[in-house]
Image (cartoon, rainbow, N blue to C red; front, side):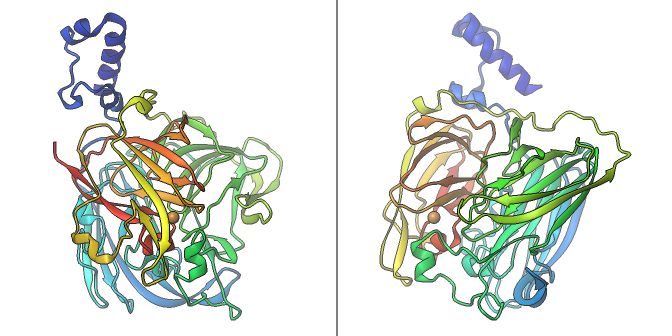
Length: 475
Ligand SMILES: [Cu+2]
Protein backbone atom coordinates (compact mmCIF):
# COMPACT_ATOMS: atom_id res chain seq x y z
CA UNK A 1 0.00 0.00 0.00
CA UNK A 2 2.79 2.35 0.93
CA UNK A 3 4.45 1.74 -2.43
CA UNK A 4 1.20 2.47 -4.25
CA UNK A 5 0.70 5.73 -2.38
CA UNK A 6 4.29 6.76 -3.13
CA UNK A 7 3.73 5.98 -6.81
CA UNK A 8 0.62 8.10 -6.97
CA UNK A 9 2.47 10.87 -5.21
CA UNK A 10 5.29 10.76 -7.72
CA UNK A 11 2.95 10.98 -10.69
CA UNK A 12 0.90 13.70 -9.05
CA UNK A 13 4.10 15.63 -8.37
CA UNK A 14 4.96 15.42 -12.03
CA UNK A 15 1.46 16.24 -13.21
CA UNK A 16 0.42 18.92 -10.78
CA UNK A 17 3.72 20.49 -9.87
CA UNK A 18 5.81 20.34 -6.75
CA UNK A 19 3.71 22.62 -4.52
CA UNK A 20 0.50 20.73 -5.18
CA UNK A 21 2.25 17.42 -4.54
CA UNK A 22 3.67 18.57 -1.23
CA UNK A 23 0.34 20.07 -0.26
CA UNK A 24 -1.21 16.67 -0.86
CA UNK A 25 1.08 15.26 1.83
CA UNK A 26 3.47 13.48 -0.48
CA UNK A 27 6.79 14.60 0.98
CA UNK A 28 8.83 11.64 2.12
CA UNK A 29 11.20 12.58 4.92
CA UNK A 30 13.40 9.51 4.41
CA UNK A 31 13.84 10.34 0.73
CA UNK A 32 15.27 13.72 1.56
CA UNK A 33 13.60 15.14 -1.53
CA UNK A 34 15.71 12.89 -3.75
CA UNK A 35 13.58 11.58 -6.61
CA UNK A 36 15.88 8.57 -7.13
CA UNK A 37 15.50 7.56 -3.49
CA UNK A 38 11.77 8.15 -3.80
CA UNK A 39 11.60 5.95 -6.86
CA UNK A 40 13.23 3.13 -4.88
CA UNK A 41 10.15 3.23 -2.59
CA UNK A 42 10.14 0.01 -0.56
CA UNK A 43 11.50 -2.07 -3.45
CA UNK A 44 12.73 -4.42 -0.79
CA UNK A 45 11.88 -4.07 2.88
CA UNK A 46 14.21 -2.45 5.39
CA UNK A 47 13.27 -4.92 8.10
CA UNK A 48 12.56 -8.63 8.34
CA UNK A 49 9.10 -9.73 9.42
CA UNK A 50 9.68 -12.74 11.68
CA UNK A 51 6.76 -15.17 11.89
CA UNK A 52 7.95 -16.59 15.20
CA UNK A 53 9.12 -19.92 13.77
CA UNK A 54 12.80 -20.95 13.95
CA UNK A 55 14.23 -23.48 11.52
CA UNK A 56 17.24 -25.21 13.03
CA UNK A 57 20.01 -26.75 10.95
CA UNK A 58 23.32 -28.37 11.76
CA UNK A 59 26.13 -27.99 9.29
CA UNK A 60 29.48 -29.74 9.61
CA UNK A 61 32.32 -28.99 7.20
CA UNK A 62 34.69 -31.95 6.84
CA UNK A 63 36.87 -33.79 4.33
CA UNK A 64 35.23 -36.82 2.76
CA UNK A 65 35.20 -38.92 -0.40
CA UNK A 66 32.18 -38.94 -2.72
CA UNK A 67 31.19 -40.40 -6.09
CA UNK A 68 31.07 -37.25 -8.20
CA UNK A 69 31.44 -35.97 -11.76
CA UNK A 70 31.30 -39.30 -13.68
CA UNK A 71 30.78 -41.32 -10.50
CA UNK A 72 34.33 -42.11 -9.43
CA UNK A 73 35.33 -41.31 -5.88
CA UNK A 74 36.79 -37.84 -5.38
CA UNK A 75 38.34 -36.50 -2.20
CA UNK A 76 36.45 -33.32 -1.37
CA UNK A 77 35.62 -30.99 1.49
CA UNK A 78 31.89 -31.07 2.06
CA UNK A 79 29.04 -29.65 4.12
CA UNK A 80 27.26 -32.57 5.80
CA UNK A 81 29.04 -35.08 3.57
CA UNK A 82 27.39 -33.81 0.37
CA UNK A 83 28.52 -31.84 -2.69
CA UNK A 84 26.63 -29.65 -3.26
CA UNK A 85 25.94 -29.26 0.44
CA UNK A 86 22.42 -29.42 1.79
CA UNK A 87 19.70 -27.18 0.38
CA UNK A 88 18.24 -25.35 3.35
CA UNK A 89 14.59 -24.58 2.65
CA UNK A 90 12.69 -22.09 4.76
CA UNK A 91 9.66 -19.83 4.38
CA UNK A 92 9.88 -16.05 4.33
CA UNK A 93 9.54 -14.93 7.95
CA UNK A 94 11.23 -18.03 9.38
CA UNK A 95 14.33 -17.47 11.47
CA UNK A 96 17.29 -19.55 10.27
CA UNK A 97 19.52 -20.94 13.00
CA UNK A 98 22.59 -22.86 11.87
CA UNK A 99 24.84 -24.64 14.34
CA UNK A 100 28.08 -24.82 12.37
CA UNK A 101 31.07 -27.05 13.21
CA UNK A 102 34.42 -26.90 11.46
CA UNK A 103 36.13 -30.29 11.02
CA UNK A 104 38.45 -29.03 8.27
CA UNK A 105 42.22 -28.75 8.65
CA UNK A 106 41.87 -24.96 8.11
CA UNK A 107 39.92 -22.12 9.72
CA UNK A 108 36.71 -21.23 7.87
CA UNK A 109 33.45 -19.26 8.05
CA UNK A 110 30.08 -19.41 6.29
CA UNK A 111 29.06 -16.42 4.19
CA UNK A 112 25.37 -16.24 3.22
CA UNK A 113 25.63 -14.90 -0.31
CA UNK A 114 22.88 -12.41 -1.19
CA UNK A 115 21.07 -12.63 2.14
CA UNK A 116 20.39 -9.27 3.76
CA UNK A 117 21.13 -10.05 7.38
CA UNK A 118 22.70 -8.45 10.46
CA UNK A 119 26.34 -7.61 9.72
CA UNK A 120 27.59 -9.93 12.50
CA UNK A 121 26.08 -12.93 10.64
CA UNK A 122 27.76 -12.21 7.29
CA UNK A 123 30.62 -14.65 7.81
CA UNK A 124 33.55 -12.43 6.87
CA UNK A 125 36.68 -13.39 8.84
CA UNK A 126 38.15 -10.71 11.08
CA UNK A 127 35.53 -8.21 9.95
CA UNK A 128 32.23 -9.64 11.17
CA UNK A 129 33.54 -12.60 13.19
CA UNK A 130 36.78 -14.40 14.07
CA UNK A 131 37.47 -17.32 11.71
CA UNK A 132 36.14 -20.62 13.08
CA UNK A 133 39.26 -22.68 13.91
CA UNK A 134 39.55 -26.42 13.19
CA UNK A 135 37.37 -28.14 15.80
CA UNK A 136 35.54 -24.88 16.52
CA UNK A 137 31.91 -23.95 16.06
CA UNK A 138 29.73 -20.90 15.46
CA UNK A 139 26.00 -20.20 15.47
CA UNK A 140 24.54 -18.24 12.55
CA UNK A 141 21.07 -16.88 13.20
CA UNK A 142 19.08 -14.47 11.05
CA UNK A 143 15.66 -13.88 9.56
CA UNK A 144 15.87 -13.39 5.79
CA UNK A 145 14.15 -10.24 4.53
CA UNK A 146 13.72 -11.55 0.99
CA UNK A 147 12.30 -14.71 -0.51
CA UNK A 148 14.53 -16.20 -3.19
CA UNK A 149 17.54 -18.32 -4.10
CA UNK A 150 20.66 -17.74 -2.04
CA UNK A 151 23.76 -19.79 -1.38
CA UNK A 152 26.41 -20.18 1.24
CA UNK A 153 30.13 -20.83 1.13
CA UNK A 154 33.33 -20.13 3.11
CA UNK A 155 34.87 -16.67 3.08
CA UNK A 156 38.28 -17.93 4.22
CA UNK A 157 40.70 -19.10 1.50
CA UNK A 158 37.60 -19.40 -0.66
CA UNK A 159 39.55 -20.12 -3.85
CA UNK A 160 40.58 -23.41 -2.22
CA UNK A 161 37.63 -24.16 0.08
CA UNK A 162 34.84 -23.53 -2.46
CA UNK A 163 36.80 -25.41 -5.13
CA UNK A 164 37.13 -28.42 -2.82
CA UNK A 165 33.32 -28.60 -2.61
CA UNK A 166 32.12 -26.31 0.18
CA UNK A 167 28.89 -24.70 -0.96
CA UNK A 168 25.18 -25.14 -0.37
CA UNK A 169 21.92 -23.44 -1.26
CA UNK A 170 19.47 -21.51 0.90
CA UNK A 171 15.99 -21.34 -0.60
CA UNK A 172 13.67 -18.85 1.04
CA UNK A 173 10.21 -19.65 -0.22
CA UNK A 174 7.49 -17.04 -0.49
CA UNK A 175 5.02 -16.97 2.37
CA UNK A 176 2.50 -18.23 -0.20
CA UNK A 177 4.51 -19.91 -2.98
CA UNK A 178 3.24 -19.98 -6.56
CA UNK A 179 1.86 -23.37 -7.65
CA UNK A 180 4.84 -24.64 -9.65
CA UNK A 181 4.63 -28.41 -10.08
CA UNK A 182 8.32 -28.82 -9.15
CA UNK A 183 10.88 -26.59 -7.47
CA UNK A 184 14.35 -27.70 -8.56
CA UNK A 185 17.83 -26.47 -7.63
CA UNK A 186 20.71 -26.84 -10.09
CA UNK A 187 24.12 -25.89 -8.75
CA UNK A 188 26.51 -25.43 -11.66
CA UNK A 189 30.21 -25.93 -10.97
CA UNK A 190 33.36 -26.91 -12.79
CA UNK A 191 36.15 -29.14 -11.57
CA UNK A 192 39.82 -29.12 -12.40
CA UNK A 193 40.72 -32.81 -12.12
CA UNK A 194 44.24 -34.13 -12.50
CA UNK A 195 45.24 -37.31 -14.37
CA UNK A 196 44.31 -39.44 -11.34
CA UNK A 197 40.79 -37.99 -11.36
CA UNK A 198 41.33 -36.03 -8.14
CA UNK A 199 41.03 -32.28 -7.57
CA UNK A 200 44.18 -30.63 -8.93
CA UNK A 201 45.89 -29.82 -5.62
CA UNK A 202 47.58 -26.50 -6.47
CA UNK A 203 45.39 -23.48 -5.87
CA UNK A 204 45.95 -19.83 -6.82
CA UNK A 205 48.43 -20.79 -9.54
CA UNK A 206 50.06 -17.99 -11.55
CA UNK A 207 48.02 -19.13 -14.59
CA UNK A 208 44.71 -18.87 -12.70
CA UNK A 209 45.67 -15.52 -11.22
CA UNK A 210 46.73 -14.00 -14.52
CA UNK A 211 43.58 -15.20 -16.30
CA UNK A 212 39.95 -15.43 -15.22
CA UNK A 213 40.60 -17.63 -12.21
CA UNK A 214 40.50 -21.41 -12.09
CA UNK A 215 38.44 -22.91 -14.93
CA UNK A 216 37.98 -26.66 -14.66
CA UNK A 217 38.00 -29.46 -17.18
CA UNK A 218 34.63 -30.90 -16.16
CA UNK A 219 31.34 -29.01 -15.87
CA UNK A 220 28.71 -30.48 -13.57
CA UNK A 221 25.19 -29.78 -12.36
CA UNK A 222 24.65 -30.90 -8.76
CA UNK A 223 28.08 -32.54 -8.85
CA UNK A 224 27.35 -34.88 -11.77
CA UNK A 225 27.91 -34.95 -15.51
CA UNK A 226 24.67 -36.90 -16.05
CA UNK A 227 22.06 -34.77 -14.26
CA UNK A 228 18.61 -35.35 -15.75
CA UNK A 229 15.35 -33.77 -14.77
CA UNK A 230 12.16 -35.67 -15.57
CA UNK A 231 8.94 -33.79 -16.15
CA UNK A 232 5.54 -34.49 -17.66
CA UNK A 233 3.93 -32.45 -20.37
CA UNK A 234 1.67 -29.80 -18.87
CA UNK A 235 3.97 -29.14 -15.93
CA UNK A 236 5.31 -25.72 -15.05
CA UNK A 237 8.43 -25.83 -12.91
CA UNK A 238 10.66 -23.42 -11.06
CA UNK A 239 14.30 -24.08 -11.81
CA UNK A 240 16.89 -22.32 -9.63
CA UNK A 241 20.37 -22.04 -11.14
CA UNK A 242 23.36 -21.19 -8.95
CA UNK A 243 26.87 -20.66 -10.29
CA UNK A 244 29.23 -21.97 -7.59
CA UNK A 245 32.32 -22.00 -9.85
CA UNK A 246 35.51 -20.21 -8.84
CA UNK A 247 35.86 -18.44 -12.17
CA UNK A 248 33.77 -19.92 -14.97
CA UNK A 249 30.91 -17.95 -16.50
CA UNK A 250 27.99 -19.80 -18.13
CA UNK A 251 25.66 -18.75 -20.92
CA UNK A 252 22.89 -21.34 -20.66
CA UNK A 253 21.07 -22.22 -23.88
CA UNK A 254 17.70 -23.88 -23.29
CA UNK A 255 17.04 -24.64 -26.94
CA UNK A 256 13.38 -24.88 -27.83
CA UNK A 257 12.14 -24.84 -24.23
CA UNK A 258 9.77 -22.12 -23.02
CA UNK A 259 11.97 -20.53 -20.33
CA UNK A 260 11.67 -17.18 -18.60
CA UNK A 261 13.80 -15.62 -15.89
CA UNK A 262 11.61 -14.62 -12.95
CA UNK A 263 14.30 -13.74 -10.41
CA UNK A 264 17.96 -12.71 -10.48
CA UNK A 265 20.32 -13.05 -7.51
CA UNK A 266 17.36 -13.94 -5.32
CA UNK A 267 14.99 -11.06 -5.98
CA UNK A 268 12.02 -11.20 -8.33
CA UNK A 269 12.22 -9.23 -11.56
CA UNK A 270 9.64 -6.62 -12.53
CA UNK A 271 8.33 -9.00 -15.19
CA UNK A 272 9.38 -12.31 -16.75
CA UNK A 273 12.38 -12.00 -19.08
CA UNK A 274 13.46 -14.20 -21.98
CA UNK A 275 16.23 -16.40 -20.62
CA UNK A 276 18.45 -16.36 -23.69
CA UNK A 277 21.66 -14.40 -23.35
CA UNK A 278 21.93 -14.18 -19.57
CA UNK A 279 25.55 -14.49 -18.44
CA UNK A 280 25.60 -16.48 -15.21
CA UNK A 281 28.83 -15.33 -13.56
CA UNK A 282 30.30 -16.83 -10.39
CA UNK A 283 27.93 -15.96 -7.54
CA UNK A 284 24.93 -15.22 -9.79
CA UNK A 285 21.61 -17.02 -9.48
CA UNK A 286 18.65 -17.07 -11.85
CA UNK A 287 15.23 -18.52 -11.12
CA UNK A 288 13.49 -19.83 -14.20
CA UNK A 289 9.83 -20.42 -14.98
CA UNK A 290 9.78 -23.36 -17.39
CA UNK A 291 6.46 -24.33 -18.96
CA UNK A 292 6.09 -27.67 -20.76
CA UNK A 293 3.22 -26.97 -23.10
CA UNK A 294 4.39 -29.20 -25.93
CA UNK A 295 2.66 -32.54 -25.53
CA UNK A 296 5.29 -34.65 -27.25
CA UNK A 297 7.94 -36.64 -25.46
CA UNK A 298 11.33 -35.04 -25.89
CA UNK A 299 14.79 -34.79 -24.46
CA UNK A 300 16.20 -31.28 -24.13
CA UNK A 301 19.92 -30.71 -23.61
CA UNK A 302 20.83 -27.54 -21.73
CA UNK A 303 24.11 -26.25 -23.16
CA UNK A 304 26.54 -23.63 -21.87
CA UNK A 305 27.76 -21.48 -24.78
CA UNK A 306 29.73 -18.78 -22.94
CA UNK A 307 32.91 -19.85 -24.69
CA UNK A 308 31.48 -20.61 -28.12
CA UNK A 309 34.27 -22.89 -29.44
CA UNK A 310 33.82 -25.25 -26.46
CA UNK A 311 30.16 -25.66 -25.51
CA UNK A 312 29.48 -27.64 -22.33
CA UNK A 313 26.50 -29.86 -21.76
CA UNK A 314 25.05 -28.87 -18.39
CA UNK A 315 22.08 -31.22 -17.90
CA UNK A 316 19.05 -32.70 -19.64
CA UNK A 317 15.35 -32.23 -19.22
CA UNK A 318 13.32 -35.25 -20.29
CA UNK A 319 9.63 -34.75 -21.04
CA UNK A 320 7.75 -38.00 -20.79
CA UNK A 321 4.06 -38.60 -20.14
CA UNK A 322 1.32 -36.11 -19.40
CA UNK A 323 0.67 -34.39 -16.11
CA UNK A 324 -2.76 -34.41 -14.47
CA UNK A 325 -1.98 -31.06 -12.91
CA UNK A 326 -3.76 -28.04 -14.33
CA UNK A 327 -1.41 -25.20 -13.68
CA UNK A 328 -2.45 -21.65 -14.30
CA UNK A 329 -1.17 -18.81 -12.19
CA UNK A 330 0.31 -15.36 -12.63
CA UNK A 331 4.08 -15.15 -12.78
CA UNK A 332 5.57 -14.17 -9.42
CA UNK A 333 7.89 -11.85 -11.38
CA UNK A 334 6.03 -8.62 -10.72
CA UNK A 335 8.30 -6.83 -8.24
CA UNK A 336 8.70 -3.11 -8.00
CA UNK A 337 12.09 -2.34 -9.53
CA UNK A 338 12.98 1.33 -9.97
CA UNK A 339 13.86 2.22 -13.56
CA UNK A 340 16.19 4.99 -12.37
CA UNK A 341 16.25 6.53 -15.84
CA UNK A 342 17.78 9.63 -14.24
CA UNK A 343 20.36 7.54 -12.41
CA UNK A 344 23.09 8.52 -14.86
CA UNK A 345 22.39 12.20 -14.17
CA UNK A 346 23.11 11.74 -10.48
CA UNK A 347 26.66 12.59 -9.40
CA UNK A 348 29.04 9.64 -9.21
CA UNK A 349 29.54 8.90 -5.53
CA UNK A 350 32.78 7.03 -6.24
CA UNK A 351 34.65 5.53 -9.20
CA UNK A 352 36.47 2.27 -8.46
CA UNK A 353 39.37 1.34 -10.73
CA UNK A 354 40.10 -2.38 -11.11
CA UNK A 355 43.52 -3.52 -12.22
CA UNK A 356 46.47 -5.83 -11.56
CA UNK A 357 50.16 -5.47 -10.89
CA UNK A 358 53.19 -7.58 -10.05
CA UNK A 359 53.87 -8.29 -6.40
CA UNK A 360 52.52 -9.97 -3.31
CA UNK A 361 52.80 -13.59 -2.20
CA UNK A 362 51.28 -14.89 -5.47
CA UNK A 363 53.45 -12.76 -7.76
CA UNK A 364 50.42 -10.91 -9.09
CA UNK A 365 47.98 -8.72 -7.22
CA UNK A 366 44.49 -7.65 -8.21
CA UNK A 367 43.73 -4.13 -7.08
CA UNK A 368 40.82 -1.80 -6.42
CA UNK A 369 41.95 1.83 -6.59
CA UNK A 370 45.59 0.62 -6.63
CA UNK A 371 45.12 -1.25 -3.36
CA UNK A 372 45.45 -5.03 -3.02
CA UNK A 373 43.45 -6.28 -0.06
CA UNK A 374 45.23 -8.47 2.48
CA UNK A 375 43.72 -10.19 5.52
CA UNK A 376 44.92 -7.60 8.03
CA UNK A 377 43.18 -4.87 6.01
CA UNK A 378 39.97 -5.70 7.83
CA UNK A 379 41.19 -3.32 10.50
CA UNK A 380 41.74 -0.54 7.92
CA UNK A 381 39.15 2.15 7.22
CA UNK A 382 36.57 1.28 4.54
CA UNK A 383 37.12 2.31 0.93
CA UNK A 384 33.86 4.22 0.95
CA UNK A 385 31.25 5.27 3.47
CA UNK A 386 27.66 5.55 2.26
CA UNK A 387 24.66 6.84 4.15
CA UNK A 388 21.88 4.36 4.69
CA UNK A 389 18.65 5.02 2.82
CA UNK A 390 20.18 7.38 0.25
CA UNK A 391 20.61 6.79 -3.48
CA UNK A 392 24.22 6.13 -4.43
CA UNK A 393 25.74 5.89 -7.90
CA UNK A 394 28.92 3.86 -8.16
CA UNK A 395 31.11 3.54 -11.20
CA UNK A 396 33.58 0.73 -11.88
CA UNK A 397 36.31 0.99 -14.48
CA UNK A 398 37.89 -2.30 -15.50
CA UNK A 399 41.37 -1.21 -16.52
CA UNK A 400 42.37 -4.85 -17.08
CA UNK A 401 41.64 -7.30 -19.86
CA UNK A 402 40.15 -9.94 -17.55
CA UNK A 403 36.62 -10.66 -16.32
CA UNK A 404 35.49 -9.37 -12.94
CA UNK A 405 32.09 -10.34 -11.52
CA UNK A 406 31.76 -7.67 -8.84
CA UNK A 407 29.80 -8.74 -5.77
CA UNK A 408 28.48 -6.50 -3.00
CA UNK A 409 27.60 -8.03 0.35
CA UNK A 410 24.53 -6.90 2.22
CA UNK A 411 22.77 -4.94 -0.52
CA UNK A 412 21.33 -5.14 -4.00
CA UNK A 413 21.95 -2.76 -6.88
CA UNK A 414 20.67 -2.04 -10.37
CA UNK A 415 22.93 -1.90 -13.36
CA UNK A 416 22.50 1.55 -14.93
CA UNK A 417 25.00 1.53 -17.79
CA UNK A 418 27.72 -0.36 -19.59
CA UNK A 419 30.40 1.81 -21.20
CA UNK A 420 28.24 4.86 -20.67
CA UNK A 421 25.22 3.45 -22.52
CA UNK A 422 22.23 3.01 -20.29
CA UNK A 423 20.93 -0.53 -19.91
CA UNK A 424 17.44 -1.54 -18.93
CA UNK A 425 17.63 -4.54 -16.64
CA UNK A 426 14.27 -4.89 -14.86
CA UNK A 427 15.85 -6.52 -11.82
CA UNK A 428 18.30 -6.01 -8.99
CA UNK A 429 21.57 -7.89 -8.68
CA UNK A 430 24.17 -8.64 -6.05
CA UNK A 431 26.81 -9.61 -8.63
CA UNK A 432 27.50 -8.14 -12.07
CA UNK A 433 29.98 -9.40 -14.61
CA UNK A 434 32.40 -6.82 -15.96
CA UNK A 435 34.07 -7.62 -19.24
CA UNK A 436 37.54 -6.69 -20.43
CA UNK A 437 38.15 -2.92 -20.28
CA UNK A 438 34.52 -2.24 -19.52
CA UNK A 439 33.07 0.59 -17.44
CA UNK A 440 29.79 0.11 -15.60
CA UNK A 441 27.55 2.30 -13.48
CA UNK A 442 25.28 0.93 -10.78
CA UNK A 443 22.63 2.55 -8.60
CA UNK A 444 21.63 1.43 -5.13
CA UNK A 445 19.97 2.45 -1.90
CA UNK A 446 21.87 0.70 0.90
CA UNK A 447 19.64 -0.06 3.88
CA UNK A 448 21.63 -2.22 6.28
CA UNK A 449 24.17 -0.50 8.48
CA UNK A 450 27.59 -2.11 8.81
CA UNK A 451 30.86 -2.85 7.07
CA UNK A 452 30.21 -4.98 3.97
CA UNK A 453 32.68 -6.60 1.62
CA UNK A 454 32.82 -5.76 -2.04
CA UNK A 455 34.95 -8.07 -4.15
CA UNK A 456 35.47 -9.85 -7.41
CA UNK A 457 33.72 -13.23 -7.29
CA UNK A 458 36.46 -14.83 -9.34
CA UNK A 459 37.80 -16.28 -6.14
CA UNK A 460 41.45 -16.25 -7.24
CA UNK A 461 41.18 -12.53 -8.01
CA UNK A 462 39.62 -11.89 -4.59
CA UNK A 463 42.33 -13.98 -2.89
CA UNK A 464 45.00 -11.91 -4.68
CA UNK A 465 43.60 -8.61 -3.48
CA UNK A 466 40.47 -7.62 -5.43
CA UNK A 467 38.42 -7.04 -2.32
CA UNK A 468 37.51 -4.05 -0.19
CA UNK A 469 35.07 -2.81 2.43
CA UNK A 470 32.09 -0.50 2.05
CA UNK A 471 30.61 1.09 5.13
CA UNK A 472 26.91 1.84 5.38
CA UNK A 473 26.46 4.41 8.13
CA UNK A 474 23.21 5.30 9.87
CA UNK A 475 21.82 8.52 8.51
CU1 LIG B 1 38.14 -10.46 -10.99
